[in-house]
Length: 204
Image (tube, rainbow, N blue to C red):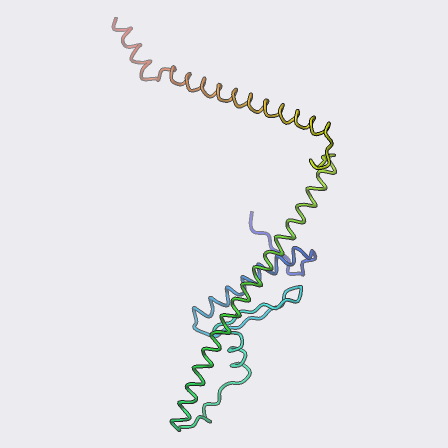
């Protein structure tokens, strides 16, 4: 069977939509990183989660890419004065260090937001599992151990002990059966041995 095509429409369930957003966002950021690495270009991606939380990825940083896009540097206005060049170079170095620091902070915040979102997703999954377990127990009239009285606890203990005895007995039966099968295989002569014995009897 081929892969089922997913329709391109908004996911209605909020929990599923949050999980889908987390997976797709990581995929987009990964593709942006690959594009930047393979082609040596500056990349910036910004997205808001269904809950309104911002996420971004940038190389070298989102601010650097946005500043470059909105206001390119006018090189015609650069002065040839050495002192001015030195000051400009020093300012550029400081700006690069500041940009690199911002990039590290942004990436750290993106990782933190990603971990928080994954934790929220796992929390939603746990709540869903707990609801399903509670519903199953209600449908099968299964009580929680904390809600059982002394008589019900004793009865449950007896059932568990009987179940353990039955499992142990079944294990012993399976072990004995396996041993008998091994013994029967060892005693059964092979075809070559049977032919040799038949040849000996004919010679006699």
